[in-house]
Length: 434
Image (cartoon, rainbow, N blue to C red; front, side, top):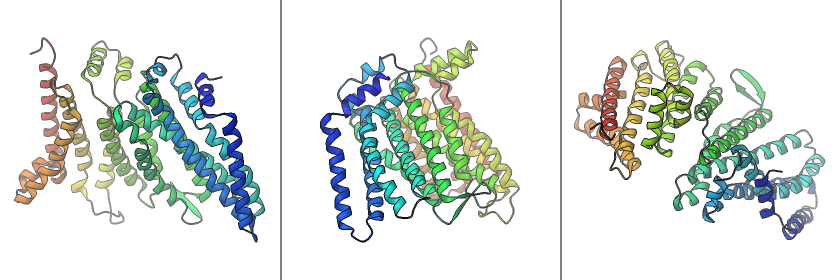
């Protein structure tokens, strides 16, 4: 048996806890039955579903996240990292073991809710709704663990207190498309019609698989097990294909725009959430100079993958915008087609500037300095130039406002300057290169 799974079971279960939970649930169901004299079956089904959500989605999710944060609080996480367990074994051992008590209570709730729903003449919906509840529980618990593992790399009190907030933000991001599937009798996705409940269950299965993959790769990062950087761009591609499938018309245009937006969001998020230490990039440069391509890829952080993936989406967006007609829901024309490519160049510029701050030998807070610079470049400076009425300087400072080939040319100049500054920073901060 997985030693981490067995350890978590020892921590979660005791004879008292095993006996108390069924008694409490029995008391709740008896109270519901006695308070609904006319139609107890629907009331019992709803009560079972609510209690299942509380035990699995609430208690189980918090327990899965605490399986990581409690190790940090108790100062036993370093011992976990030094163990010989592989990332996937550690992931599923913590995930299944820490949430086992919540699943124990959830199973008892299903034993009441499913027969009650069957007697309430919801025989066709009950199994699918139960499956949806199980997949939702797996999704939330794996997502909570992945978020806490990422926060664990930062350390401090913020890491211990921000897991629930980050989970809520991520869950709200997927809740919108998921609730959109419940409208109408069927769902049109990539021009195919699906039953709304079947599509919802399939979507939850996809989300659960993505969350499990995120937890596994996050655990590998924390355990310092190097892996090829396909996970982050792969998640961005899955999110793009899923969201773009709901477009009522012009699927290729929507695919390009959604893909470009998703890759932009993922790139900046990884750039801010992941440290960019100079020794890591020195190892990348050493591997590249020795033509060790696989070893160089193993050393790369996550953001270069989504930055590269943004380029084909930008090309697709530019091609679809240049061929647009009056049926498109937005009023962009050929004048704006090249701005998608300019956006990729601006992203590359910002990544180079982030590395400049990270490579500075006396920089104590490179992330804060980079955030301040982004606020100035993308917010304060265009605002001041626009208020002053200097349209020319405004376009130079913010290439996306120029439009057409001019936007692409100015963005190219910005990238060249940023790469020049990065090269200077790299040479001046390298011993023997000054």
